[in-house]
Amino acid sequence: MDLTEFKRNLFNLQTLNEFNETALHLFRYQYTNNSVYKRFVDALGIHAEKVYSLEQIPFLPVSFFKTHEIRTGNFPAEVVFESSGTTGMETSKHYVADAGLYQQSFTKGLELFYGDLSDYSIFALLPSYLERKNSSLVYMVEKILLHSNRQMGGFYLNELENLQNHLLEAQRCGLKIMLIGVTFALLDMVEKWPVKIPDAVIIETGGMKGRREEITRMELHEKLCKGFGVEKIHSEYGMTELLSQAWSAGGGIFRCPPWMKIRIADTNDPLSYLETGRTGGINIIDLANIHSCSFIATQDLGRVSEDGSFEVLGRFDNSDIRGCSLLAT
Image 1 (cartoon, rainbow, N blue to C red):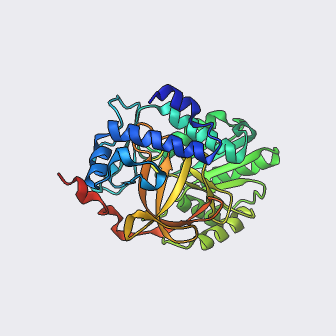
Image 2 (image 1 turned 135 degrees about the vertical axis):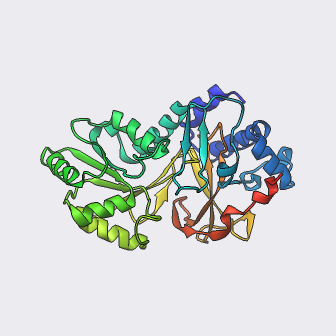
Image 3 (image 1 turned 180 degrees about the vertical axis):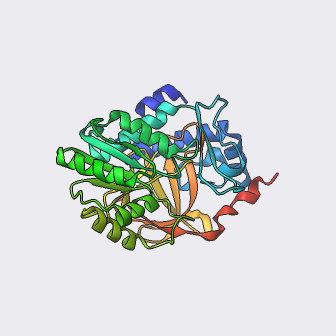
């Protein structure tokens, strides 16, 4: 497979057939050049040369990123992203061969949903992520800030009063505001320093575990809408192990860019897929993950609608052990 040509065409996919053909080419390439994925596929008894459709492609459990180096080919990593975790907890590591490809993916994805980033003054409220190294989320926001309207904006750690003042000033100046924040920090903001910015785009990126009592998405968005004076809260769905993200313009309904798709697997039989509207495990095809693995079984539950949009409904407990015994040796 010609990687240069593949990357050139990756973000120009137009049809479902183009996506499917590209995914099959990438599956064969990763099977051949990714030793961990090859062993996983072989252990399932799947013959790669007989895989002719997306339905036949196996998805690597995301937990393998905690226990193995998931690399397609041999390369020096330009950057290594690491998931968050408490002391002593195993974290996922994503060895990225081409950081420019990641930048293309998140920039083109964001602009597909929100338009030209230079139109926005972007504010980032990412405590806990800023305080640790190797966060893919911080890396993403750092780069998109370079494309933004830089009259105002930037990172804020715990300076909620300053953020409130700067958001109000940006609003008075007539700037187009985008606020990207982790969930617990956005809640802290609306509880301690609420600010009415009704025309702003507020994007929550998740991040409640271990920080605050869990609440439903409906309760969360209701509190944030009231605190910021907006009609809806946007959301990002991404993870350390991916190079692409899905975005929600409200109501927890996510949409993928053309180079990313969601499949819903039967939680009792990970090699079987469910029809639209049924709840199961979220499997992700991320064609930008050329140098790691593009076919990932997450630990999330969800369902897909007829138009390809999807919801995230929670997590399932046995995902950490699903499939792991296949690579015990």
